[in-house]
Image (tube, rainbow, N blue to C red; front, side, top):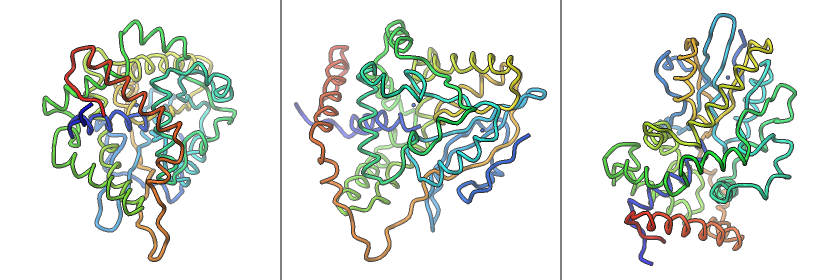
Length: 348
């Protein structure tokens, strides 16, 4: 088949990395956390990329909502980050009566037993995340967060619910891709989709990072896109929402009500930052008022030290042929589904 256009490639990368993003307690004193005076009630910002002259950082927010004596902190997270970021989150999360965490399929403790039940589309995304994890040399959320903490409460759908909801809504990864393509073609959404120059810079940066072995270049290419995750997800959600965000957020709010009725007053959501614009609206509708927030640095992007040996990233990328074949099979299947629906795209 013909090679995909840059527009198609940028959209596919956006969907692939969407999964890295599709907290009276004191905030952590760790150097990974920075007080954010520019987060004000109503801003609705939970993830950002800071492109400074001396340093570049991907940051997630912890934003507080209050209703009487009840406190709910939205603890934004990216699923792949510096180890110090997850250390700071563990310190923060220990302070709550209950931490309501995301994990499609079921509780953390039984995740290995459910591996065969996983949806193939999500399994492909998880394989992609595994590759990113090995290439960037960062820590994965399930490695860095203490999910066995006594105050952790599973607050997500199981695989049976996921499949039923996806079938009821007639949604697949391909339909989400189709929405992203439509958003890009309409000139809406994050810059990486709507601005050809910005998208090409991202792709060039990825190629440069792979060629030189400079993981900092890879991070600088990916972080701006993740920093616009809220815009991306809001566009894909549209008016009717998606299973990956809207339906799971409904379940989370039901479990929040249950925990509040049990007497817990200090709670946190531990979900990807991309869920939070919708959850903010739901909390506001339930009578909660936004108060204050901070930023925590998830990616502190630094160039390698002079003389430091550069890894062979191309070799790492293709070190597991079975994983690469699985990813390519998943991509081709998604493109076939799109073509069957009449969407004009070219598979790689």
